[in-house]
Length: 260
Image 1 (tube, helix red, strand yellow):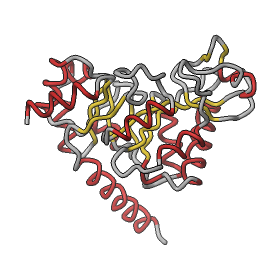
Image 2: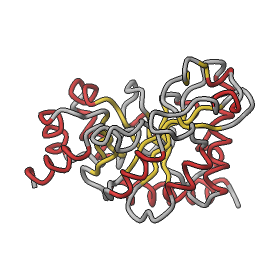
Image 3: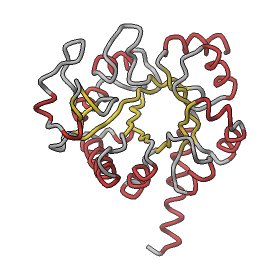
């Protein structure tokens, strides 16, 4: 296949991803699962399951790699005061989450996330490595491999604060949906690098309201985090973002019903 045909084929694939993702309007993404109302641990299987049971549009979670190359789900760089990247999984397993669950591996988490799930997108945040950029990119490759092995790639999108992690994923997967978190690039810039979306703190969009229309004009996914206050929810809803990431999915559902 010549260079033109490769480029044309990739462009068509990208347009399909853009079209399917941009069909969503004000879709609700539970930040670290639906944990707050029922006091589940964040990023736990229980919080994921509750998000799915609520039929939310998405549930976000965070991936780290241990010293012995296990992929685990946790927000912070440390678990029970142990730095995940410098600790073997067996040592992390000695400690439980507040509800008695063990720290879930990515394989376990995704396996649960695809059970009886017809509605909820799995929003996979790959954490930048605190050891090296290269380690973070390797973690990204390993993460994609696990998700593909479980045949969950069509139910998963990837987000990261590390732009190079997203570019690494794009290099090995031309179809998957990618969203950038840092808030320092315009929608046109991310599109030029074949990144599908801007997933920024809502304050970034308040400072750069022109990026909202720019994203829509360029068919770039709009996602805002972490929107927990009713006033901020109402503003985002009025702007018709594709996704809204929140710790308060129940409240956001109420605000959407009122506004609709």
